[in-house]
Image 1: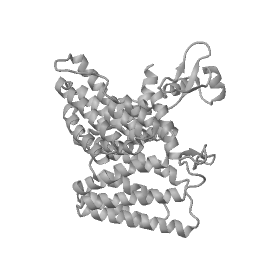
Image 2 (image 1 turned 135 degrees about the vertical axis):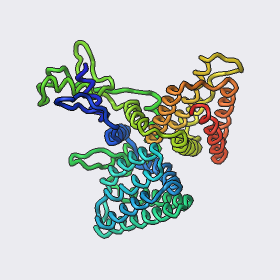
Image 3 (image 1 turned 90 degrees about the horizontal axis):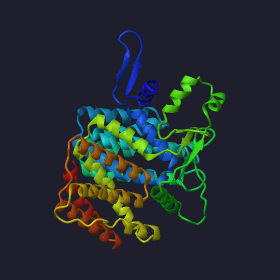
Length: 434
């Protein structure tokens, strides 16, 4: 058990075993690489669409540009200009162009935003590999336009013009969206999948004449609410060893790494390959971000941007039968009055979580849903570690009222009022939980 535990923490790259005199288990600084790779694997399995990805980028990247314009320093300016210079010196190589967005997010000084943008850029790279142009000249022209966009954003950030930086970033993401949609290889569902050569190609639509994005959102909502699990039994240890070139000790250690219900005990049991679960990615990212120590403002800014985007999306989808039916399930299910016991207050906290995650599921964007759950986990850990107290009964009544008013605005199709009410509600909730 100890050996498996050591291998597990090494797998997450939060510790390493040093051999020889004065050796032992050495605690390391968490690495963002394994965390982001785990999230990308989960999101690919969820069938994240190109539209979902670019909608998420449209929420995160303008925010990063605006914050960078407020926070950038001399070192940050040099860093951005070095990345722009590398784009010119290495034409045709996509890595430097991905690097610009990551470098820009770093200048925001918001570790939550940095990590989420790094995940989104890894996914963008997957989709970009499945895009094709008609000629090399067209590809070079597209890269030149990207460089021009990046230069304009960097200039606005350097000048401290947060409004212009945000506007240019929005325009850039929209241009990237249009280009990728135009040059997608194969059909238009936009779901990435690996091909036999290691590239990524979109899936063909299963039903002609229907909106692929709408179909994927519906499937995502059904799967999220149903919570279905699937598995495939890889057989007993002896059978696994007969197929895999490793020893018994190595097999036992490796089996302990995928720790989300990996074994089926008893007759017919063995190593079971399960569907990737969101909670494993949430825990990994939360561990890394705890090390980075984001402030309450860091969590609030990213969380608020995601929540407002979710509400706006639900307003657009409100007339779909499934969405309308699910909106009814978000009505407050508890009736509180002043003087309720502390246990009821904790139920109210769960009700608050259910409402916001429910809106994220209705919006149907797998990335933003996962990112919001990560922020919720960080808030929960912060609240637990600081000995926070649940809100008072009067606050809970106010929360119920706020939820009802947000739902009323959504059902009425009043986008601006729904945004206003969710923003006011989030301002109040931040003071309770952070």
